[in-house]
Length: 269
Image (tube, rainbow, N blue to C red; front, side, top):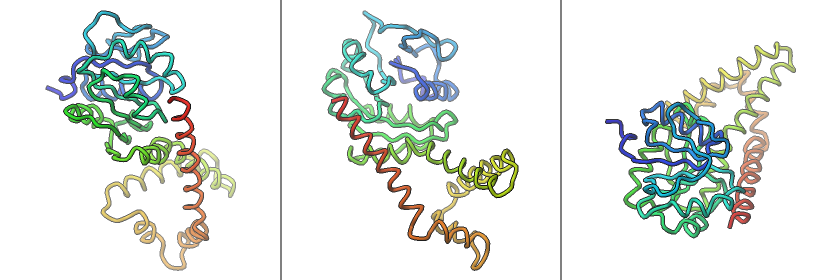
């Protein structure tokens, strides 16, 4: 039997882009739709066979797993209804950016375990990253069973570092998309047809990421292996490396994202 089949009833409160991507990947990986309930205002089923409601079910056995997938600013709108259906065996997973563990535990005190999860968009392909934080206790195995089909799973021990992991991996795809776009735009600015430059940039990043993932060497070493002394690549790297310009830019980028996460945490306390 598929491991996902043994998790019991799974309720998703909110099913937007991220939660929807996670659910579709779980279904592809063997999760049967029958134990899944989605609660969303539209009432539109995110996938065939998934029970979809516009309001929280009443009078039913509490779910074994409940995932919060609403926007962080909507937590107050759903917290009371969620608290009423959480049971002593419920594993509550939150993908709400910036919403701290203490806030979740205070609002959903009946839950057996509360875990923060921060996935990124490539989970839709099973090639994402999911950062986790919380004391799952006996339900840790269930958390990992649920998250493994999505990609790399990393537990973050210190909640202060969870925000940094979110900035790096959660927001990271957007930053990388911007980098790909900039590579393509630069190629076009120098004379390549725009669509051809984009194809070259996307394929280059895809191949390089696969090589980095499969190598025992660091990305810095791989870069140096490509760049022969006095060659084209070295001259280009000299521009990126001058004054640690690229690293400094990315530090500022992650700082800005992480700072916003702390602001959001204050707003949802």
